[in-house]
Amino acid sequence: MADLEAVARALVAPGKGILAADESGGTIEKRFDAIGVESTEDTRRAYRELLFTTEGAAEHISGVILFDETIRQRSSEGTPFPEVLERQGIIPGIKVDRGAKALALAPGEKVTEGLDGLRERFAEYVELGAKFAKWRAVIPIGDGIPSEYCLWVSAHALARYAALAQEAGLVPIVEPEVLMDGDHSIERAYHVTARMQHAVFTELHDQRVALEGMLLKPNMVLSGYEARERAGVEEVARATVKCLRHNVPAAVPGIVFLSGGQSDEDATAHLKAMNALGPQPWELSFSYGRALQAPAQKAWQGDPANVPAAQAAYLKRARLNGAARSAGYRAVDETR
Ligand code: 5MM
Image (cartoon, rainbow, N blue to C red; front, side):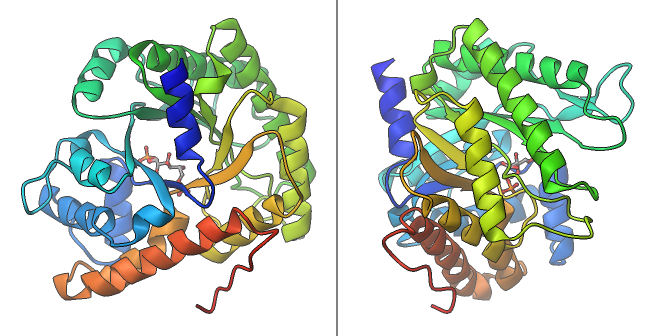
């Protein structure tokens, strides 16, 4: 347990956050399509190498979440990716869920699969160098959904995963993502997020998960992306922190937000505004996928000549989000 807590705390060390580079095959293909790059094992490897070898990233990035294929790949010099990261003091982690599938008898709702054989997969990931893990539950908001059924089966699965991760000696990142697609208000987003966080911590407690040795990766509380009136940065920050204060025990070392399709600048501004609200029981950090990588992908376009520009774009987002962790003390300047 002492080791789990040390890893969890290192992942939320001051000024640093996590890079979520665990896009599964379908998701990375979508990202590559948008920049006109074919998704092959080698283009995926080259792109991840670009991120993992960015000089200076380790000042702002504490850990990287890898996908099953990526944890087995090597840099062009032949070094396994987990080792490439460890040499810089970046902690390698692994996504272990097998994706959100339709939930039986619940139209429009989802449940995440991947528990079968997970104990054995964890044993292999430990051998491959993983120190932490991630599992994402997906909760859409819509007409009459989410149901309590969906929230509680998703929370139950998250806790089963978290218990198995701790048994294997890995820090579980528990990710209950309430999607922000739709035209719902921020109040509705708050209500659903609070119900989900309540279910998650009830299940984690019942399934004996040590809160000191885990991290929560939640959505921020935002208005639906198609809502007519959208809440501003200060309101989002206050609602998100209030929801966490009501539902997340102080024993949890850190909250590492997902970006969930926000613009890069919004994801940074929200993180900064939350940290500016003053000290909280847990660290407030980031575990962004799109909000750290989007500008780098645009700059790269699959051309090796663009690698320095792509690395500079990634480093900029990492630096600005790292600075947003101590927003009360230091300005986040988007122009630099
Ligand atoms: C990187 O994307 C992860 C999910 O990939 P799949 O959907 O392919 O399994 C995702 O879980 C990610 O870690 C989080 O949602 C954070 O990423 P964003 O882009 O929301 O910050």
